[in-house]
Image (tube, rainbow, N blue to C red; front, side):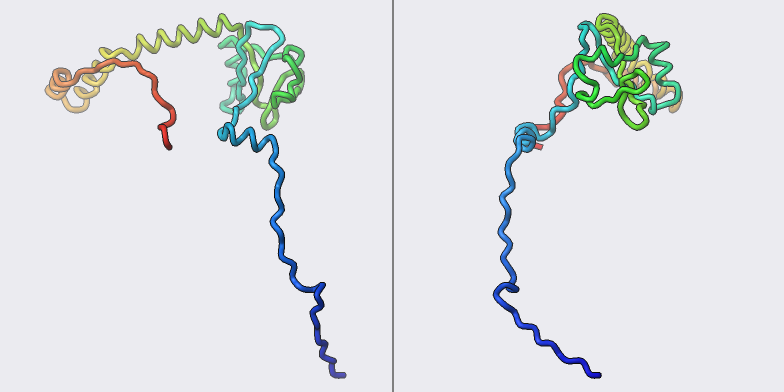
Length: 177
């Protein structure tokens, strides 16, 4: 049997409707981001008892890292009841009595007495300043030049270069970029 052709007629209800752009409400998160487009970073973790320096140790960086920082470097795990607030407020979970985050809880929140931390940082700075003097740097350059190119080249480098030590703040971002 032959099919009958249907004729479709458009009614005013079938006519395409022009879509009006919806006005999205401005939200406080967007306003905060516009004021500080790079974000505020992670919230500072506060402990109930003052006088501690906190640090997140990522055990996934290398095998034995957690053991190293607890046995050899003086860091101690933070217990959940030591945090001023809930662990979840700072982006952490509590697993097996430890304050952790990350995949499988491999990032552990640790603490160290602030005085000990400051003393270690000062010792590191003193060591770096002593190890990286201009005279040591020049001696290393002269030695490497002599080993690679001979004594005459080392003597030329020794007479030709001057190492000037200078400390100044280094801008992290160039203005206008």
